[in-house]
Length: 464
Image (cartoon, rainbow, N blue to C red; front, side, top):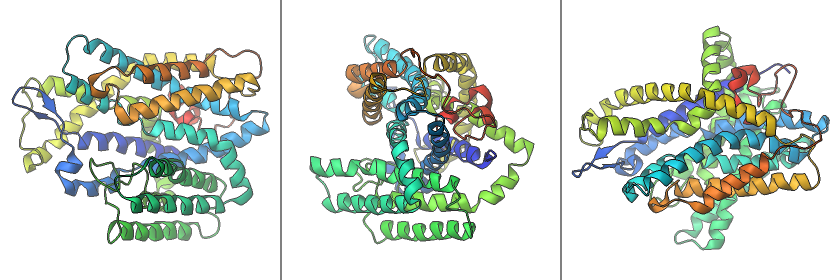
């Protein structure tokens, strides 16, 4: 199978919209005492919740991830890899750069606290630097389940995402019907939807790779998915009980994302349908060398973009807002929206410099990853080290996603230790066994392997 550049495009497009979306909704206001606050745009300007229909692009990550992981696991299993070895190698690729990023942010928190930095400011900054983390524990858990999910796919095909979707829809309806305040049991049941809803899209990635969504009347199938699921979404957010916002809004209940709702499930399926429907046209555009270069450029720096894209906000805030150099029209006014354009351009320029400065660190992490990644054939007691490391890391990342790096302005000791211990367990030097890379291919067809798209810098693409 030749490499499908369209999947690389989906990931590049998704990371671009994630970055732009976070920057767009981040608006800074200087208080009379000179400190900064960041009003919640979706709450302060309710009409902007409609914008989330375009910026909630995470289904594309899970779709592309399933497409990549299905082929990678199938080849690796046939070559003698174990589930622990395969999952461990992919987890290390995500966790090493994530742990490096987290360690540097936590170091800053640890330094700023004793220096007397305002606790509320520290908590706000810590939250901003972790706002993207929700994706990582969910994706790691789905990666752990990939061998089992792929086995179900090989046996039952499209029936698997259908059954998962029905279950996810039911869970979403149950949580919405329970209403606030919710018991611990209801919250636990709702949390299952993080795996069911995003798992549906991941499973559709398997089906897409194996031609189950594109054989015969492929575009008709895609159009039916887009229109049918889009109509369900409209019914659920119109006369139905769910809000239009596909990003968490404080105080909004039910929420579409915490946990993932039936409406988010419908939107995700509709988005998959649109992605498959436009695939032929985009593939033709990707035949141009300029388009391929742009996708490769985004792919090569995608992990750095994902992790570090809120740092420019802090840099620009310190340089222009704390100093009073930035004009400050009324929040949400016409003038304020006009200034969003230079805001985005300045942040883009700063992020480009940050990514360039991080290249030596990325190269070093790539070298460390090749040295410490688990053996593909990992078995026995060594396999339990992988599962224990994943458990600790997933818990820590979920904590950071929910509380930030400085909850209440304090240093999060348990979560910091959890991520450090989890990463260390996964990255202990291997001993014996077969150290081959489960994601390596001779022809570069594995879309989880960034070497075919982004050169040796594509660690993020190899992981997802």
